[in-house]
Length: 82
Image 1 (tube, rainbow, N blue to C red):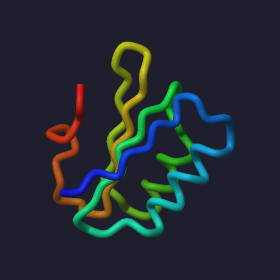
Image 2: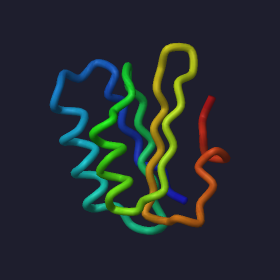
Image 3: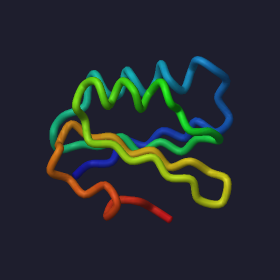
Image 4: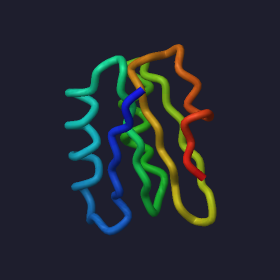
């Protein structure tokens, strides 16, 4: 799996959501989005849910790690960088 990295911690609303949505539109089955953010991006997770993507959102030491993939068979926990 190829990782598409997006560090949104210093970006202002709505830029993180816009960038993430752009990545999701272009993403292939063999790729996944790995976003780090200062908060849990609920609107992005709702889009992933509606599109039936696999997703994981986990807070670690005050930083949110968000992983999204079109591939529903992928274990995103294994791809979590902590």
